[in-house]
Amino acid sequence: MRIQYVLQEIGHGLRRNLTMVIAVIVSTAVALTMLGAGLLMLEQTKAMQGYWYGKVEVAVYMCNTNDVGHATNCTSVITAAESAAIYTKLHGTPYVENIIPESQAQAYQHYEQAYGSTALGQTATEQDMEQNFRVKLSDPSKFQVVQDSVGNMVGVASVVDEQQLLQPLFTFIHIAEYSAAGVAAVMLVLAFLLIFNTVRLSAFSRRRETGIMRLVGASNFYIQMPFLLEGAVAGLLGGALASGVLIAIKAFFIDGIVAPHLSSIQFIGWRPFVFIVPLLLVVGIMMSVAASVFTLRKYLRV
Amino acid sequence: MISFENVSKTYPGQERPALRNMSLEIERGEFVFVIGSSGSGKSTFMRLILREERPTTGRVIVAGKDLSRLSNWKLPQHRRLIGTVFQDFRLLPNKTVFQNVAFALEVIGKPKSHLVKVVPEVIDLVGLGGKEDRLPNELSGGEQQRVAVARAFVNRPMVLIADEPTGNLDPETSVGIMKLLDRINRTGTTVVMVTHDQAIVNQMRKRVLELDQGALVRDQARGVYGYVR
Image 1: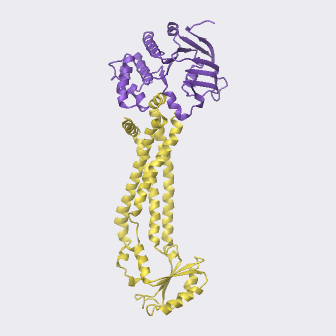
Image 2 (image 1 turned 90 degrees about the vertical axis):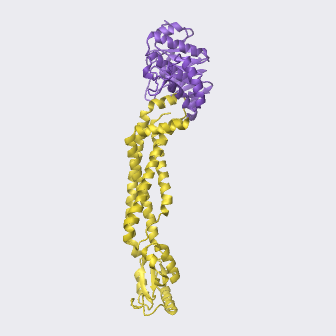
């Protein structure tokens, strides 16, 4: 009896304010799509950073078989003596805080972690990797000091400022993230106002019923529940719509169009969706219920 | 059953109190008329019993409970003790007679098995047997008020409050409603009825409370409307 009554009330309520409910669902969906997109971009930067990003600033790559004849200082594959000399030189260089040696095997392992699924990652072999030193600086901007110190030593193929390489791209992504967060915030406010209005209309059009319910002693919860569930259903639909849009973007836009053209970039997989989709659904429901509670306190006297 | 102890009520932003220093006692099973001109405090009196308002000073006690100490979440329980009937019936227009009466039980969570037993009984009691499936707009004013009485009474409240229940009805129909309220009163339910209807008050010869400008100016057993002091 009770459940049937409640379901019936939700159905009536949603149909009665159909246009407002659609507005609520769409604005909630846009807000949550932006929220989800922001989170996915965050995941994307993590996917692109690779193993060493943020841990060290500079990589000193040493000659491998491919480099011989190509890089200026590579007359042969790096020897143990050369590498020891480079290590000692690095050790004496100012601003160098820590030096982590990485073998070809380790380099290959980290490379495959970061790029394993791209076209590049699938063709690379361990022999293509360079033995290297990862250098942590006490002042990250002093890349040039390292370059000057070891850049011309025999056995050094290249000295690379890893941060410098990815920084412009990350700046771009971060701007996109902040924009998404901004749009999400504005849309959340909009959705909140729409829910506020919808529930108010709903409460007004049902004031006869709620007035009688109050008089005959129906509990507050019983009176308010249909309104709350109405909001929750709208929020859930908004969350579902947002999830659908994000999944479609990932499937058709990223995997279908962008990824085949940018083979060197590791794009996010499906794994982040496992937590983002439930998150969006929950946020959608919570937001609408919160807005409904707020409105009912104001407009549904009990 | 209902007791007012030095109750005053002043609405916010108003200087003149709506009720001033009212003390009275209504016993279980009594039938009481509340009369007085508009603005004399009748509505406030009823709203205090329903605890739609709290007194500014003094205590209102209904069924042994001090209403100013009643917490909000216990309020629904309190309202289940009281049935209410209004001048304008307040029926749900899209529900049948049966559904209107059953609604009062549904929303306090009574099971369907209980409804199908109790609702027809009460519809018979108010004299609408056979009209269970009619919609309110297919009924006369008197019949609609009978539905409202049935809805107020279906939960067997201890108190029935009627706010000018005959205000929209012709004298003949009013007599029918009064007979019904009298019958309900005889089951042991306390009836408090606000009215302007002199004929009814004079005919029934029940206790009369007269209010004037927020004060209780007359409390007379077996009273009449036009009592001259």
